[in-house]
Length: 238
Image 1 (spheres, rainbow, N blue to C red):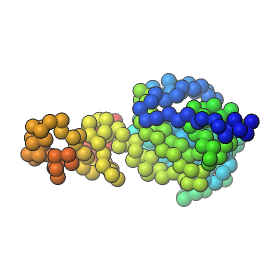
Image 2 (image 1 turned 60 degrees about the vertical axis):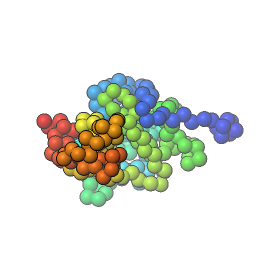
Image 3 (image 1 turned 45 degrees about the vertical axis):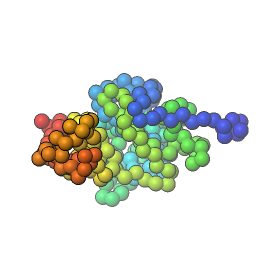
Image 4 (image 1 turned 135 degrees about the vertical axis):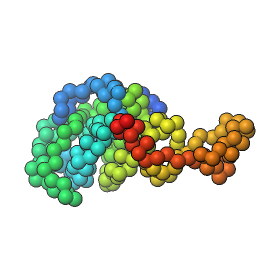
């Protein structure tokens, strides 16, 4: 039994793959994933266990930001390998007893998946045996409205996630799609964006001479993209 566990190959979906399908019981009722979320971006994330302090801080932060993510057409779905009643008791305790960084009376309204069989966690490669064989690591999957995986971030059990970065990623992914650009290091709305490489010598020459595009060399060109323009498109306020 132990030998089989050591030799077990953990499959991990990749960026560009269709999100693995599953049906699950959650704190907000049954879900059929990703079909129930068609048309929306989704952050599917795992946590090691209920009634643990790092996870508690993360759930309070996610819950406090849920409306902000919703404005960007993004829904949240959590998972751990604990049972439904444990989930319910833990979330009730968070609301009734826990205060963190000025957050209190926090109610978690997004679904938290029961995964005591680890079926979903294994489909998404959330169980990392060298980290722990009975707890899911802090995996984060960004899934687009067509059900495709667009970004994957993994954190170890000991490291709480950076929620500013998770929000930055969901905005940057949508901005890249909306404006057909790439976003450079540390990009935030209002910063210059990257224009894709030229496909020919003629295009490269024209680009170097285009006043709206700032080219440091033929392969490194940026252009301005107004913050309000980005947010109007991404936050659907146009």
